Length: 182
Image 1 (cartoon, helix red, strand yellow):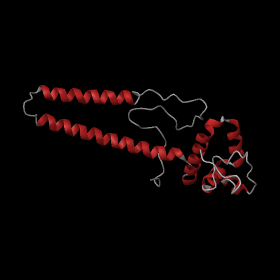
Image 2: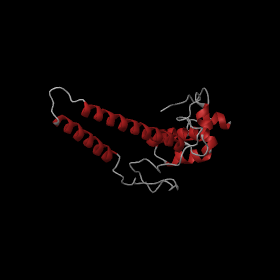
Image 3: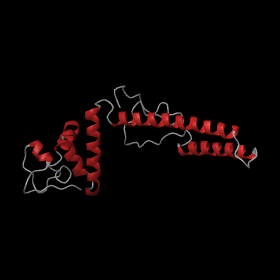
Image 4: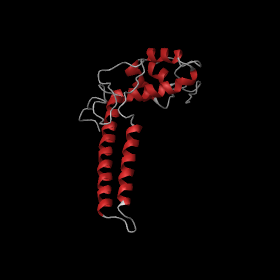
């Protein structure tokens, strides 16, 4: 947990809001004077009053995580006002899907090579072992990704129209991110 020196300089929040930083300031432990942009982003997206209410309503042991989440979302919203974190997640999911396709293609090439060039001292049984290994890898991947079952959404989160069931193809997980995202 970051802390600020109450006697020397006000926390980033009080400095930004141009008010005196009191010893019991709810912002001081989470917005140190060395990180003024952190509070500026959070204030611009969520508002100081809303953040203050949130911090006062949650248990003290969860406040640091809440502030870090707010700061991350605020920074993402500053970069991409429409999608925020969802845009970054979408880009990463598309990369995972593309890399999974490349891995599948490479595994297929490896199996074709292994089948056409048997290792010395092995019979055709070695080819069957390779094929069985490939099937077990594929079934393991399916079970790791939930095998097409739907994602259990927490009812406290808004049900956006782009939320859908997770599936093995990766399609329909999120709306396409704009082309200007990295």
